Image (cartoon, rainbow, N blue to C red; front, top):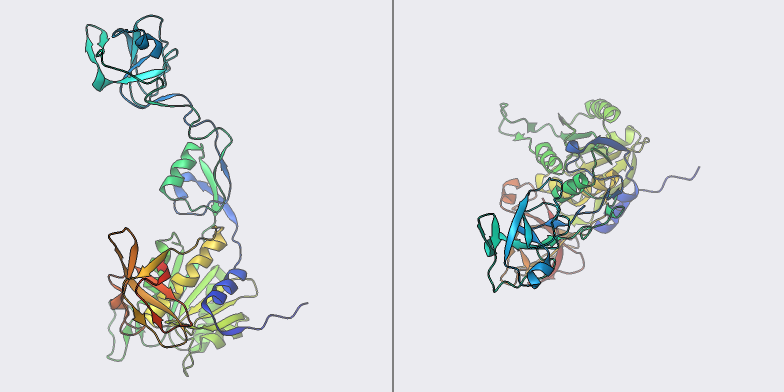
Length: 408
């Protein structure tokens, strides 16, 4: 048996993200009704069941005609009938004839051009066209298979199912679809100072907010199978409750108790439960004490710092991408934005700086710095859109500096 890899300590941001990805499981796929697949990660390839459009589709209300008839000078056409969307195509007879046609209908047999209703007058069962009309052959037609042909790949596995993808799955005829099975996630805030909203508290206690903020960030990405819990700084109780949570959940996310204080019991408790430490501490601010490990069964455990800003930043930067990857999501590069004004940061750390995005006259997005008072200042995040990742190795970041952006 090969020896366990040594845990890493005080590592760079990129290395932390890579180590997490290397140690994440791949959760199985499950088939669900299409209506239950919104926001999920597709775990199968979707091919077109037929041509799209499946027929020559009319794109304007008007009349369907033969272009040759108009080219010969005909301007008074007898209307043979009316055809709407969803109706079997009518047949256009020879001579100076036409068929009244509606948007979305299949082009009648024998017709090859559509004249919009705005360019004609209907009188005594005939369509009257102006002498100046010079239609183009095939105008106002969405030709069969011009979008795609039967058998073409429409969606690859690893695609997140948003509104366009849901429409494509529907066009593909899917009543059920294979998706990455959403994991059960336990969210645990640790600290004897934490009190639930609505409960009385002493002057030296604070409201518990982390697990709700983290839960909201997860829920907006589709991770709705959640359990929340508060735990005091009692290592025996922590061990008992965390063990029970690991028996029933695929992922454990803790906040608090991972630093160097006498009451920071989380690392020791997790080690006692048999977890393998992958790394502890990342060279970043906020969130340096971040801890990550896995159970003997391969369940990922993220132990985030307890300060609210640190906790949310770590979740967005590391946990959310890791969970999406375990569902089968294809990796995606972070968008890039430029700083609206120069900022300075002296510590030899990556700065995960909260920002508000503004649109410039040239259409580019600029990031306006919104640094919190401290990493415990959750209120300062109101009005911010996320944070930029300013790399180590420099103290000054000039206006226009381009950085990766991570949205809340």
